[in-house]
Image (cartoon, rainbow, N blue to C red; front, side, top):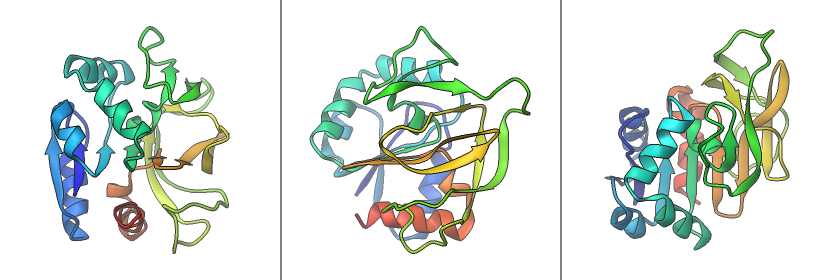
Length: 196
């Protein structure tokens, strides 16, 4: 059973449709009790870093989310859900992220068009989420901010500069692209997470 955390925004329906398409059982959760019951957690995200983190705090789920991740529950953050794993973002510097990774999410340089929107390839990598896929598969991106490459980066993408496209560390996973909008390759990523 996958618990999809609904914080009131984001691409919730697309993620539900993707899980349904691969036959995965899921439940939408909206509180700490729901997170504590979920054997796996997905945090989908679109929009603004500050709004998302404030919504998680208003729902009083930040502590439960961190508790579950630290307890070894498999977690997948999608797009803004990946960025939430970091300490902070230039999009809302006054708002704390979940702080699992000691880095700041940055805005793309002013000399490139943002958002970075459309299909792009990943750099060569080794990743459980990408198991069974071509090493240079294409995925769909839509973002103006990026997480820098860190020790836990499993795959990068290049748009003006190289940044984290896939993050893996133990039970914690994140993808900057939208697997739910990335066709068969995206379905495979979600299936790989479900089958961990």
